[in-house]
Length: 370
Image (cartoon, rainbow, N blue to C red; front, side, top):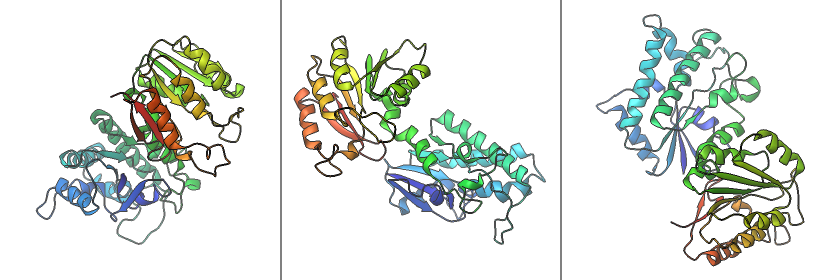
């Protein structure tokens, strides 16, 4: 499960995103997260908050702090101290708390872009000019990103997704001048860290073979994994085939094929003599995507793989959430998850079949020999 912990941005920034439990703990600053108080260390206080929400060791916790600091905490401090000293100390104490915490599965959300000045009557008003608050935000985020990179902590760069040309929060993406009202970009950013598609390195083989190239993101993810000698991808649409051809021109690892996967895959497997990691993702998705004689050829593709003489391939099947939906007369409705698993076990009864995160939890079937 994924939890967000923080100020109001822990709520607004993740509304509508599936499988995220949001916890707005009030107007809490990054500075306060980094401070001991009432006889408890800062990390103990953070652990108490997690315990209060029954957060488990395996759960992802996204920490969302810093907007209030950039809005009004930093400005009065720089009258006495250098701005870099102030911000370096702020972030250092924040990370010290995180690293001492018992929980070890944190993500860090960047500070959202500063909102344009508004006159507000409460404890945390807008201090400094728009330009100054934008500078504070950028400096905090720069250090947050550097620290996350050095510590291998996922960093959700919300700032870059929602800033305007002045580095401020884009008004069209804000509900009130301060909070984000369109979370679709945030979900895409999250997917980079949690989707199996972006963790192909966990399924290494000599060959990666994909059905359904689309824009080439699966191919790029396979290249980024840096564990495949050859990457094959089949695309039915000539439009998307050309897009991928242009995107990966000159890359000797990438081999693209135009045609129906039901026809191309058997021919391709005739020359495959090594275990593959299959990414099964060829289906009609509406819009301008291509539709073959069989709009969702998942079972046909698995049957073709089953006929191959190698029985230890790793098989990843995307969009499992759609199996059995829409009624028995629909293409997805005709599919049955139990039959899919039975087919995989017929290939190799020693397969371990689990489910990983795609668009949502349990959206990608994973069949592998462990």
